[in-house]
Image (spheres, rainbow, N blue to C red):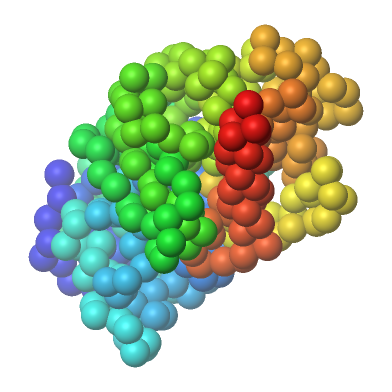
Length: 384
């Protein structure tokens, strides 16, 4: 339940499932909301974060203290709506200031019914989540709040992220096409598991016509567009519950079509190759995560949003049903697998977000790597 009328001093309470409570003021819509409490370390790009479908059913805690300074514009959303379940900030901007701003962040949250809380010690909350791990949370706001025991009971009744199959909830219901910018060089079938708008744009910039397909797409749907390559997008939820996309990934691998996966797509590739996945303690979220490309030795600063990871051996080549595979990228903070690569056919993936509309752009070369795989495949087909 949410409402739009409030005063700036409307009380709000954040309740974690382990019983920790933070008090503050309502920010955005007034009401109550539930989700998984996670923190994002990005200092910019809050509009892209809010509209990223990968954040479905998550309550995002911003570690940067000042949020909303540049307001909200009509150019930067990654999708048609805000997807976060709730929003937690310390010091929201009183007045936005940017030449592109059309409204304040508070107004946008209210207009979309997103319940948030401000005035919270987000440093203490982030330290708590780092120590205890991501967990269920509720935000309650209004002038007549339930007692603490009732709020805690409601939080503990909310669904957990583990086991959640969310891709179909956030993906497009019908196919659509993003045309190539300039000369068309390739056609790509992009399986939407929660795709961000900037992803097909980055491919279009490279002469790729992108056919975005729903998460429920079949192998017949994919190959009906005569793709030169297949892409699996980012998205929310537990990869262990995404059996449909895994089956589709296996069918694409059987045909040896050039393949690229991002974030959730990396986890789907991991499962298709026979690796397991697991839930991280508190995940990686933000635009300042160091990752090493082990194929070149280069270290990139990258944008992340994932709470699950692939369980693959870091230092050996693995035999899979589709040939040899290796870990191509690794996070330098904690050695989490950040990329996979097949050695005997043109398929690779990364766990992070190379499209990174808010930056950094260190990993944009991965789209060029994908186009190179398609170019090579086309030349080999012509020779054959």
